[in-house]
Image (cartoon, rainbow, N blue to C red; front, side):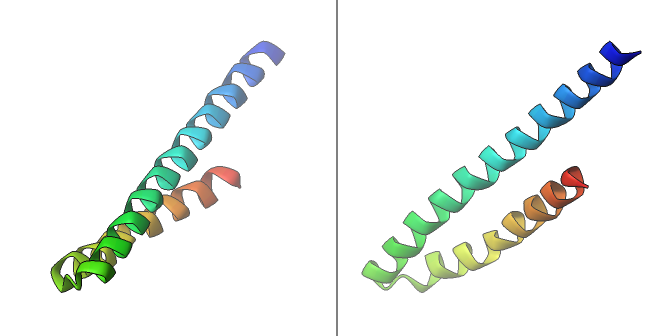
Length: 68
């Protein structure tokens, strides 16, 4: 019984870590895009960064749920 609980916990922890890494990579990319949009004064790219923020919000909610 204990082994099963440990395996389940490890799987959940791994899933949480994957989501955190995914969100970090996405945010890193969005920061680079935002800087590029600012430097090039590219409003279309800026709008894309703003729209992509919804993905970060969803990942944040998923991470919050996994932590509870």
